[in-house]
Length: 258
Image 1 (cartoon, rainbow, N blue to C red):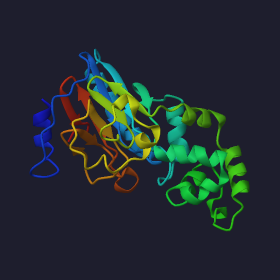
Image 2 (image 1 turned 135 degrees about the vertical axis):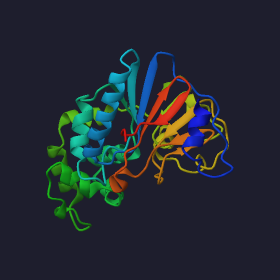
Image 3 (image 1 turned 120 degrees about the horizontal axis):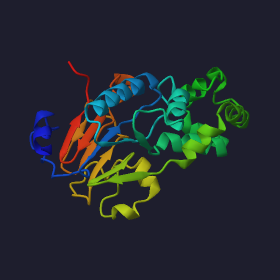
């Protein structure tokens, strides 16, 4: 059961509260993948792990929820988007929107967004689409950079990013990129909070209507708390892209066989 899993994974602190029972529907298995940030290589490795796991349980309906932040920081944002937009994956996928995708879309509409985007990943993403990132400086003409970038990004990528939902629900789990605002029903959460919030969500002891599975705030290892599970393990830097496996009342990390 999920309590035993939490003990095995070593709680974040000695006084961490064991999670309440949370389930996905019988006959289903759900995989959740944390922030990818341009690491197409790690996404391919996780896809292989999921494919092997699915093959071992062929009777289960399998779904993979990706928690957003596919672009920026790592070297292969364009490749990640190409893979996901073509649905090249071993299971049905539900890709969610992260704040980095939102800022990329905002830049395509408003060149001045480059001031913000440039501080957390624009250079790597622009380079992944074949542009010379050395041209991007504070003295650059942002409109020219936006126009050149827009010519490099396939229309299918823009359509894919524009279509991404902000959350997804399966059974007792609520999946989103960043988290939720305490005190607000899950169905009334603001889109901005779902992709940007840190506090007051991260320090909240509130038992939400469902278990929140999120990324956005990187940690050295996955966090299993009584009201949320954080699976952002800074893949672009650590080389660890975390995948959570959920089946009925069981939650565990999907890792390579030793």
